[in-house]
Figure (cartoon, rainbow, N blue to C red):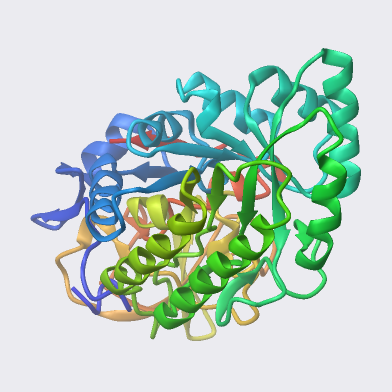
Length: 412
């Protein structure tokens, strides 16, 4: 199985085997494709999401809230399911805000982060009664102006760009010059100005980076985050009622990737929260996770439509591609393209028999889904399955490129 999956040591939670077929939440892949009616297709497992949240609840301090960042996967059915598992939702647009509200999440458990919020989005946030994470003094002034016009007093937190950097992160969100948040050295002055505005200060949002597989780095970052929140609380115009510690928990995608040690992270966080609560006894503490909650719970399924040999190299040509799953092609932040874990889903029990390249249906050499992949001999009609596809798949891809039909999505 390790060979078939390339570099995953085992099938992720929620996935299994039935004869040659991969199963998702106990259902054979071919039956799922028949149910969907066509490929390409994203399939997400409720069971995998349930088990991931349960593992977090077991390992992390009981009084630490878990928030789902909708940007990771905004499929409405996924958002609705996650809303029933977690303590809050984090949004980054008016569209995501509508999804959060439709999922029935209380406004007090929804926060809105992201640079470049429009005036319309700020008004929508005020009217909904959610917490706005302020990214700059300019945004604070615009929100205060909208609040005065609406006769409201919106809840706000300051998103802080920390001076420290999260080491070995897949995507750096803090440290150095950033478009995200307010530089930590500027926060005390901004808090002083906030005190005179019609804004209800609640606390801080500190997010240093994402897709981190370095357990020691995460533990050090969380300590630095708590230290920073405590320092800044001395300048707060009111009682600190919320501290979002960020997230950054990564999942293994590529050869050599190892999962984080959740037990060690939880033990370290317990000590940090015990210290923080002595100084901030009325604060709600939360971590904000997206990829870690849903990334391993999803697969991308695409059908082989052609098999061809060009000058000695075998290509499996599929009906999917980077227009559905940009990260898979290596064009979403990778410096050097690496293969996601992949298998032939209807031949999952067979041993590798050949080495092939898997390409999509688009007219660009960038549309590569797998390079030199060892697989069972596959032919037209067989189903290529790409794991680790539950986060930043369809919504982070150029779906309009070449005007192909959109893929299906199923939550099982």
